Image (cartoon, rainbow, N blue to C red; front, side):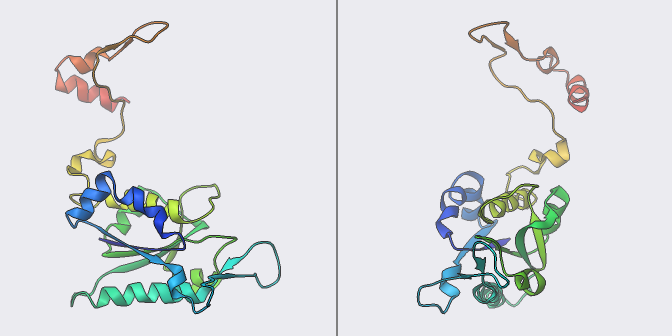
Length: 217
């Protein structure tokens, strides 16, 4: 799986992608992350990628031309890296988009390449959503300043479905379900009040009862 991130803040991704599961998965070539600075695709001498909105209004709008060029560059680059035709999906992050959930993440995991367009300012020229992106995605009913955090959320949600990313596929909550978990010590003494203890069933060694207890939560 190749993730292609189109952004005006490429360094935002550095820390997260170079730690933990993402670092290991890239090292083992389970996934790759290619970051494209949108300013590299503008002809403006000041490297501007935004302009005032037609019809008036506050703020600036990200222009279609550099986004179009960046997406086409990512697509062409992929086609040149092998004879096999790769399945590519281009995603624009938008408050109007389809809500990201586990089913959508699993669907995205079937693609070879995901091109992720990270907007900023007051929005992105609507022609990007209409003609360039295959679909729009939202990660929740709230507003963020840009698409970089949503891109990281989507990347992790999708990567969890890629064999080898988690190490053990059994780690997926979608398989095991979500239930309370505990570890050592068995008894914890806070400064005030009663002791906090681990449920006895988890210490019993009776795996049938433990499965039943977990299923009930």
